[in-house]
Length: 242
Image (cartoon, rainbow, N blue to C red):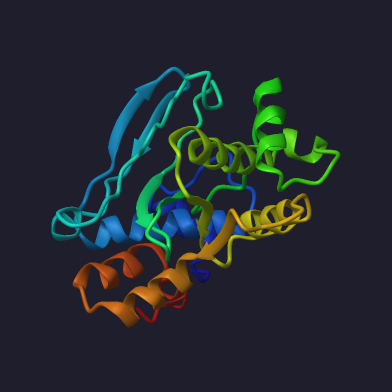
């Protein structure tokens, strides 16, 4: 019998998705399925308009959820004062500036995504907000389509939220695995559209975990890393050494 390869492993773990276009995307899905297998968690089934899909479960961190502000926030979704669309952050962290002013970090998390999809309808409101933010170069056509469109719209959401709600400062940040080539390339292209990057940041999940470990010995940090970043477990499984 031949050696197990990544496609075989993905098939055995029900970790194949037709939309995956790179090895990293397949590895990311396999890692999630391996984690569920290790913890005895079964995938649920969801019947939607596009057919039946397997759904996993979130990492249980009740001790972290008691103290961390971690939620899908929808400031002004559909509100004309903001972007008048469905844009939202994955995580919203309220904080203070060095001078004591109100500030926030709006975070978009990209894990396995390739950022390629159907372009959303462009609105004149986006250009209005971009003009008020003053951090974009002229000629914004690359920002109006994938893979940059969602990054731009979330950045705009951070900018207009700061303006409308009277924050002293705000940053929009993208959090992603360092080996995701699609997100890494999109972020490099996005930076080229900025005249200044004071309100934009991109952080890898690996760097975030490293910083958290410097600040805390909470056990959920290792659990998080094991679930989302332990890609070496895939190599061990494929080589038969796990």
